[in-house]
Length: 316
Image 1 (cartoon, rainbow, N blue to C red):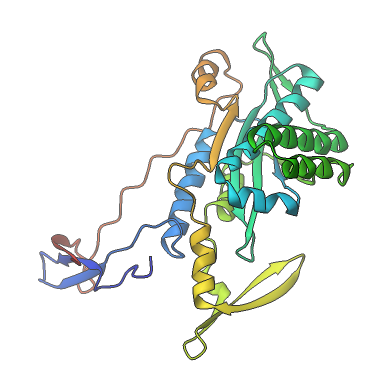
Image 2 (cartoon, helix red, strand yellow):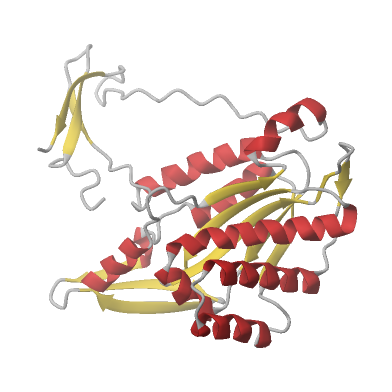
């Protein structure tokens, strides 16, 4: 990532068949945490998500956890899956309680905050309604917010209690989180969304983008070996200066573990259900993905003729 588009790392060589002009194009690292390549990953993921969503109103919500649980998840990344599973059970229970129907749920785990500290929260796209056993679509446009928060708290804490080590410390932690949060855990319930493409890009921008954009890094001081960056929270701008190694350490800790799934599909969006829905539900037809545009050829800067690839050079 540090050598992204560095000619010493590697490059492609093109030649114009018309005028003989030669051009070199540096290789990109294609890393998802790269501030340059990460945006491309986010856009591609957003396009894929948009083609997955059914043509019904959705609700975008953000499920959060108390600060006391962050260290628990930092020490055991396997518990991050529990967050998404608990969100799924919460939404299914809320919809079934209203209409006895199964909703479509897409959970996207966002493991960090704007200040580059671990702050796991789950972005959720859920259908406003669900499918009954009779194969009928039933809309549900209202969810009792207070009940939603308490259900989320109960589902998360009871599942964590089963998965965590059976110690007195963990039991006291779970009990205190029930006692100190009588209204449940906070959920940011955004407005209804009806444009799948727009919504997918919105979530992709916050979830699949790199941990920090280059525009937020304002200074690297080689004398003190420190990095300065800024972030916004609640409308206020905050500036942070820290040792360069600490800055890198924070970024590295935010890289997902190998084979860790940050996106999970539940209910009507689960792989098991997708095939059946296409056969029995025409009202829920998905948006057809647009044909992928062909990659634009490298054109000669002199005459505009498409250039030909004549060599690939990589560092040893």
